[in-house]
Structure formats: C-alpha cells, structure tokens
Image: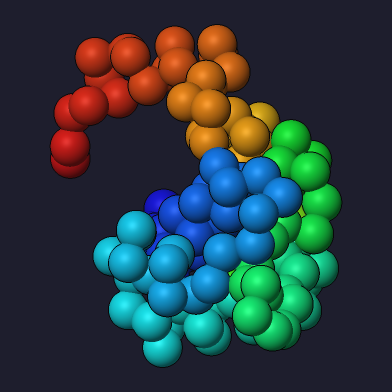
Amino acid sequence: MRISAKADYAVRAAVELAAAGDEPLTAEVVSSRQRIPLQFLQKIFHELRRARLVASQRGRDGGHRLARPADEISVADVLRAVEGPLAEVRGAPPESVSYTGSAEPLQEVWIALRTNMRAVLEGVTLADLATRRLPRRIATLAREPESWVTR
C-alpha cells in the first residue's frame, strides 16, 4: 500500500484537530504545527468537511474542529474521505473483479488484503493517535521485527 502525501497530511491534520478538542484551529495553525503546505491543507479541509468529518466556523474565533468525537473517527474514515475506497483493483472493488486460469485465486488475495487494511485502519481512531495510546494489537504488530523490514 502506498500512502500519498495527501492521505498523510489529512490524517496529521485530523489528529491535530483531535488534540485540540473543542477548540477550533485555523488552517494556518494546523499548517504550521504539522508542516503542511497551507493551500494543500485548505483543499484537504474542504474534502474532510464534505465527508462530514470536520466542521468549520468563520469569524474571529473561527477555525476547524472535528465534526464528531475523535474516538468515533478512524484513520480509515479520514483516508476514505480524501482518497476513496481503501482497496481497489483497476478502480473497482476486489469482489467485482474475476480472473481465469492460474490467476483465479488472485481475487481472494485482494479481498484478504482489504480485510487486513481495514482491521488496522478502522482499529485506530483519531483519539488513539492524539493521546498516543494505540490499541494493543496495533502496537504489537508495529513492534514485530518483521514490520520494520523494508522490501
């Protein structure tokens, strides 16, 4: 899985809002704290608002805040808001593709991959990240020596 700059920025911005609680943060503040280009961040906030994950208010005390409690928003929710479905094969869901011959089992591989991505990304909320308390199973996976091997 390749995580785009947009996806990374969106999750970081959402975690920054989660850490702020109910206090709205301006895009400039989030941009500065997370080192995200401001114009890019403004587009990301627009997409997060459209997905109803972020709310904005104008005015002197305005800014952005999460539209729901941080413990109700998963990393998967944020990624879907800015990138679409978590796993696609040539732009289609894995269950809608089919293969013939020796490649026939490949569909099951793509479905299993999506299931595992969901297990991780839906299992971590913005609150988990903002409080630096990952769920035990996620932290255990990340501590596996094999998890740190690049190939």
